[in-house]
Image (tube, rainbow, N blue to C red; front, side):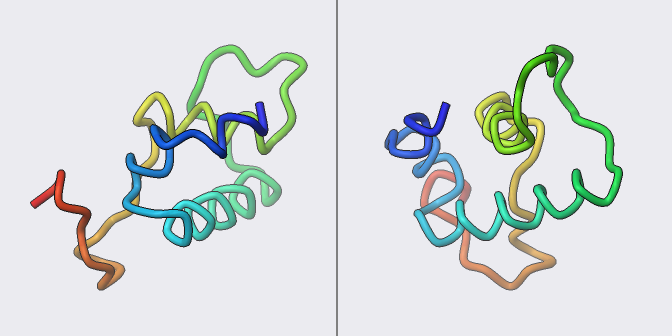
Length: 76
């Protein structure tokens, strides 16, 4: 599952490695604070694996307008 973090698909989905790191960190914090996973099959998965699947399945994204972060070209 950690290998998926190295793929260009997930990096391009959010617009870069730093944005990916920020999104993962924020969502991990939410899960650790008791938020419910947004994917169905979580049995046997770590919280990091859940976050990665949420990103890959477009369940979570960066709110570019609220964050002030520039949108990747694919969102413009």
